[in-house]
Image (cartoon, rainbow, N blue to C red; front, side, top):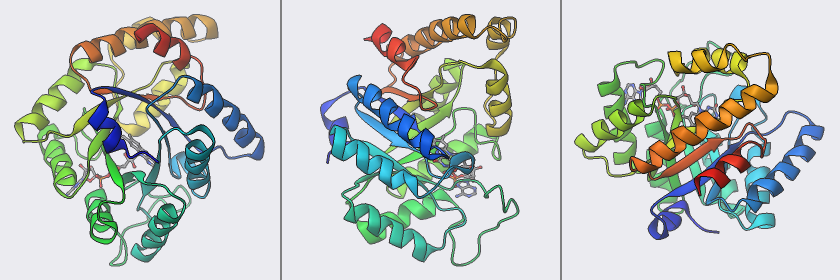
Amino acid sequence: MQKITDIFARKSATFSFELFPPKTEEGYVKLLHTIHQLCDLKPDFISCTYGAGGGSREKTLDIVEYIQNHHQTASVAHLTCVAHTKNEIRNILAEMKRRGICNLLALRGDPPRDNPNWTPGKDNFKYSWELVAFIREHFKKHFSIGVAGFPEGHILCPDRELDARYLKNKIDKGADYVLTQLFFKNQDYFDYTARLKKLGVSARIIPGILPITDYPALVRFCAVCGASVPQEVHDIFKPIAEDKEKTLAAGIDFCLKQSRELLQGGAPGLHFYTLNKAHPVDVIIAGIS
Ligand SMILES: Cc1cc2nc3c(=O)[nH]c(=O)nc-3n(C[C@H](O)[C@H](O)[C@H](O)COP(=O)(O)OP(=O)(O)OC[C@H]3O[C@@H](n4cnc5c(N)ncnc54)[C@H](O)[C@@H]3O)c2cc1C
């Protein structure tokens, strides 16, 4: 199976999708259909989250393996180190290797919902850079490693300069590329990449893009993850919040404009948060290619 770094060696810009493991068997069956539709769009890779929002951790590897084996599409397994011991992480990495998985996104994650006060002890990792260093120490170059980046600064580190230095540290420890948190003001992304370039980071910083399909849910989600919702987004989407069709159409327009501007400004691709749906990303991909 292709490593993401090999794809980068061939292509100056990639487009990719993100999925999450559904909570129910019915959701899982639906997801397999969505994967089929998404693979028809010929993405460079598809990533699958790990335990995000309380989702099942076990299913991530199954989904990634399925995408690789049934659709011959490169796939990235997210892996969070929160609430795992180092030994557990070592076993998960060995299991990934055994299954032929060679791409992962190394994350810290957030304390689980059923244990919000969890704090790391000596057998745990505190930050994602420790996970990256551990993977490189024990698995050398087997994995192509991505990490998370935050154009507006991480919610716990709003100092953007400091957060950029933490990102550089993840790259220095062995990460190959960055997928960013969603954002709606492209200038935040361009400022972020300029800040990182100044620090000597040359790894690809691939913008994370969320097509807006549900305004109230978006406002709730952004409050939790620390991404800001610009006034322009409120002005467009608030008056049509109750109208699904109008929201979908406006979401496609907004996303197409955002995506085109990012690519024209030199972004090395786009990573779409699909929310496990092929629509509207199918229309957006057609519109930008
Ligand atoms: C593209 C993407 C995919 C994601 N996928 C998932 C997923 O699958 N599952 C999931 O549960 N969550 C996921 N998340 C959410 C992510 O786990 C959380 O945002 C988490 O709070 C931070 O993870 P991190 O890997 O960036 O952590 P870290 O890099 O460890 O950073 C965490 C905090 O510590 C600070 N920090 C970093 N390094 C240092 C240091 N050396 N010294 C002091 N402070 C430091 C950072 O500024 C930040 O505030 C994803 C986020 C993104 C952007």
